[in-house]
Image 1 (spheres, one colour):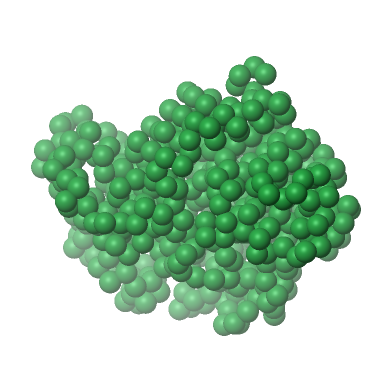
Image 2 (spheres, helix red, strand yellow):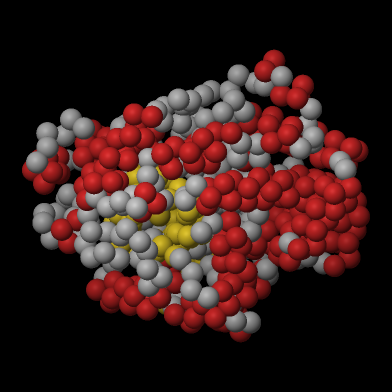
Length: 509
């Protein structure tokens, strides 16, 4: 698919401001869409929207299909009568920090609100709302039934991972599932309610964004977490032993992110089994992704060509081996089922010549643009492939990424003096406004799409970094935008660059 010359901003929903401890799908999300429109942008890119588990990482979701109930707006629930206005009295809202997500207190508070909303819905909702809920449950049953049972079971087992439950539940014995389904019937319905409200709110926001000319870029992590509905309900699709434990896990070998590689620990797919049914699980996953978003970025795209297999039990990712993935066979199946789809291939990392050629050929065959990150570009002179003078048009260029430091943080803390000297000479600038210098460089490049994390738009430093790979827990995934930081002056400055460099496609410039 050909991408027009345009630009956008990266910010996860959790990073939006608001008084409930975490960004949500309420008023501030709509304000952000308005900001993007005023700034002449075409894209809002988010991280995965799935419910998160241990570590709060959106890349370790509890389901590849479900939405994160923490993103549900309490104020929207008031609007439809599922909460009373008094439920959101400021005196009842904990004093959450404005600049970060404190996940533990947020989860407790919002779970309580959702329980109250479900109870009120059951007791008072009009017939048309209950009919809409019933339709949602029927239409989404292929993934929703497993998800709701999984989440209810997880709560009943003190949030322990599924492979620590009773053996008959671990192996999904039909009689045990039926018995627990009866026991947890109301809790299961409550989980379905949360998914209904997530999708009601998210798809309403998507419609609003699309009407404003803003397209949403979603994110598919190539792998799924072991403690997920996907693995529990589809064990035959993964390399697991008789106790449902992984025999091999995901990772990447040592690269510029980590000297010992990254041991992600996801169970690996049995690609030959997936091929036998025409990659049905993947087709369903892509179908859901393109329901939620207009464009989808695939995290670790190279894993479809070849992937790093690490024996289970290793402490680092050093001891592994490369194996071939499904390659074009998978994407042929996706194209047959869904037609031509808009995919961005995250193709970063160290490649040998054969792997680089294979991934490039796979992207070229389907027209999937790759990624360039400017903060990675200044370490090895003018031949570096991330420098803009080496681009062709079929790329998406980012100033920085959610897995790297912000531009200002990189310049101050993560770069060498040689890199700082080279970037100043490359730009013909003194480095005093380095974030906006790199935004200008990205927007001026020939790459069809230019993106900047909102942190770079605000020239924030390392304190605003979203994630540090191979580390767990806060401050990862915790950063939040403060109310009022995205001012009209910031929008005007961004619009000026977007117009100058021919990316304001909705304005006709």
